[in-house]
View 1 (tube, rainbow, N blue to C red):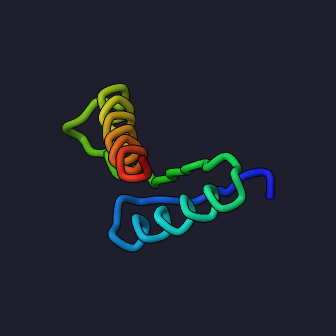
View 2 (cartoon, helix red, strand yellow):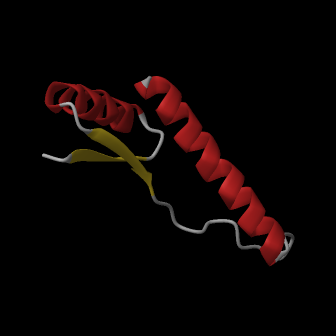
Length: 72
């Protein structure tokens, strides 16, 4: 393979998948790509749309930061 791609959601199971993917990337000496996707749960009357977008980006970045640190 030319890269290994793994999807994460912050759950213990996705961290196990990340561990496996990291080992495979090392084994084949290829790039490890970590992907995070989400639904947009922040819609409410109390939160402005732009604020919701900012909150979503911060939450997603936190999940990715934890995954990247875990992979290292």
